[in-house]
Image (cartoon, rainbow, N blue to C red; front, side, top):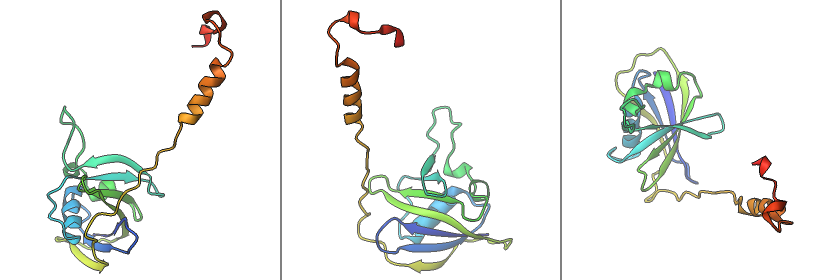
Length: 166
């Protein structure tokens, strides 16, 4: 069995700790997390692989979205394969219109056999609305403008431009 801590990405502490079967699919974990936080589990959701610093990686969607039918989905990914070690992490996003975002981490593993998920810790209440996400994008336009200005600063005719480098 796995002890999994799920933390809502918000200023206040909103945490649920679940004990789950290590052979359960991520689809099962999706429904367990949704239930633990009071959702019905009917909205679109995805898990994202992540590194130690919680940098978002490959998406594991609720449903297989590939045209050929060979893509991954929560139903085809299992906890013991996706999160094989203690302290392995995933980011979980529930309801893409609201963007409820959670940090999921395996905090303990044991050989105990478990047939049904249990919530063993509940801290904090879910806010009325999902916390706003602030997406920051670096402004590279200034750098690009400077580079273009440098390249064409002394440009007067096509004869002055060296096409051999491009």
